[in-house]
Image 1 (cartoon, rainbow, N blue to C red):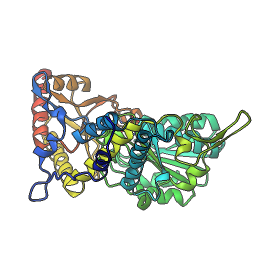
Image 2: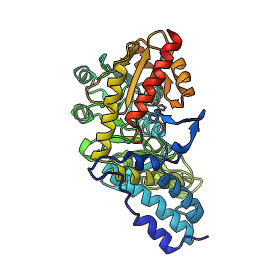
Image 3: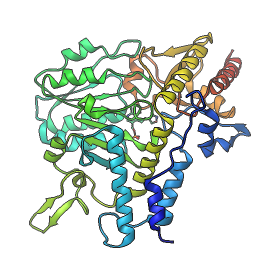
Image 4: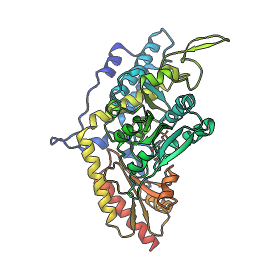
Length: 429
Ligand code: 7TS
């Protein structure tokens, strides 16, 4: 079946879904109904999904948009003159424009599709980093980074002779900004910092950090993997040089993410991978490269992933704004209070500005056992080091139990968690 003009048109002028009740709050019945997975049972029990920082569940409009692409628009992009190829290109480039608006980037050429945050950071390290860093230069990261914002910089430092410095955090899980500032100077070429900690939920004062770095002409990469599902992101207001996100953590599919980069930086950067679609001309003597973003998108891209990400942005815009942040903050505060009332629970991290995450340990119980027992109750949490081993070391822990929230979680989910943890305590008392 070929997409008709009207089916394509319907993608463009989609019907906005209203997820609020009459009073402007989220209608949780409607929100949860948007996620088919909540009809599933786990060990015969309703699914309580508290692991959205690992990956979020997917709303029906994302699943539908992706299947519609395969059913009606599938062809390779930027290649054919035929109808479907033009449709697919329109869908893919339309998704890029949607991401541009979502991040408030000035130009859609500043939006590079990648596999996810990990690839975005590696891209910057291996292109911008290798072109600009020399022995004696410094890359500054922080003590709360995910491994994907540590290891690429270590690799870059090994390749260039630059050194890696680390800004410390305090025991509440907040960056110590004075100490961070002391580590920024004329040698600093790049600062790479997470917007929101995946292990603690801390929201970092990114704008201040960017100003500190720019005072020394250092470039700043912001890891926005955990910020994108929860916060309004405005790359121009932040004035960040690079911003990285993953589709799958913000209600979109896996295998698609975005690197935002300022035009002048992307223009001057060498390509990341070579291949089709990133060139202007190729001869055996020399090839010339396309302009960004295509210069960084060698090979057939994840077209259906981009379409799914665009649908996820639609979902966030429908559900989002004030109502969503109020709801998420209500469930987070309720959860922190409920867990802090449990005598055996020790909460890890207490940043005043935080979103989405509660990390904790239970006296004398290995986090893995907590996760396993909760699982039998239908409750999904993550346990372990959360790919942030240096952060765990700071707290003197090998692992924590982590509850992470999304728009579909409710106070009832927290009540079920507390009940589950009471059972865990009973086993180990
Ligand atoms: N940065 C942060 C802050 C993250 O939380 C993650 C993934 C990444 C980068 C990497 O993202 P990816 O999409 O490229 O894998 N964080 C987690 C987590 O907390 N649990 O599982 C994955």
